Every structure is written in C-alpha cells, then in structure tokens.
Length: 244
Picture (tube, rainbow, N blue to C red):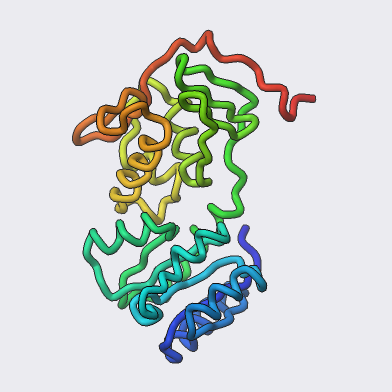
C-alpha cells in the first residue's frame, strides 16, 4: 500500500498547486511547488522528492528541457501534465523519460489514480527469478543479477523496460496482448494506453536486437500484441545471487 509521499509540482499556475495539494492530501501526500525549472532541477537532486508532477507547457524556459535534465541525474518518477492531446506530444514526453502523461483538463480521481499507479510501480521490486537465460550466442539475460548482455555489451535497462522484458521472456513463444502487457507492467489504470507498449518495445529492441529494424527476439503479432521468440529452455542455468 502506498503511504505518505513527498511530491514536487513544477508549474507557473498557483491555482493548479492549490488544487493538487488539496487532491493529493486525501492520500496523505505532502506537496511542494516550484515555479522555475532550474530551481526544480536543483530541488530534485537536493530534496529527493518521491514524485515530480511537471506542468510542462507552462514550465518551459527557453531551451532548457527540465524533463531531460531530471532524467540525466535522477530516476524519480515524473508525471507530465499537458493541454496537448496529440500522440506525438505523448510519445515525446515518454521518450524523454516521463513515466506518465495526463492530458488537461483532468478529474481529481483520475490524477490520484495515476499518482498511485506511478508510485506503486516505482516502489514495486522488479520480479527477479534466480535464473540466467542464454537465449543464444548474442543475448544473455540474468534476472537474478538484473543484467542483460547483448553482443558482449552490458545493456542498462530502466525499471519499466526490465519488467516488460521479464514478462515477454517468461512467456517466450506466447503472444501477449497489449492489454495483458499494460496490466502486468503498468497497471490496470493504463489498459487503454497501447502507445506505452509500442514505445517501450521500441526501446528494448534498440538495446537488445542486432538490427532493431529487423527484430529477431521481440516479434510483433499484428493486431494482437508481441511475443518473445521461443528458445531452448535447457539453456537456462541457476543464478547464485540470493540463493540460500
């Protein structure tokens, strides 16, 4: 269960701060605010909030991209609020590191639900079966150590990417629908956000595929979802990490 958390709201709109403080207080959260993006970036690293809510269109400041700046120094969850509802804007925010994108105007119950879901994902330990999987000579995945090696390179994965890969690999050979992946990786609240799955599959392909344009591991089943290529299960070996 999500307890009281500290949330930093970045906006030039004082009314929005008041509304968010009132709404999030229902769940016991403490809301701080920042108007200036450079100040917000500093507070993320110094004050270590549990969540950032970024009213991005209002908090833009010249060429300074606050979301990208946060991602260079912190893994704090970020929810972007925006008055723009286009797919390009959503994808851009997610691509720059946002954990969620909420279109204005929004209702208080929706925002509280999204905040709960993002905090839950951030605090939920990723599944770590003590198994090292040798997919082939190019790709090895050690879920016990949270290590992925592709082409001899150690590949860093974001927590969401790791959870997505986990569910795909552990259902190798089976098609997982968009709805199934959204429920398992993001939560029930995201059951209609298919673009999240497509975007993060793209991220994974860029990191683990020899040629992301011609994927051989994460395969698209048109109109259905995705499946991880089936592989020889006998190649799995125990990982010693955490074994008692």
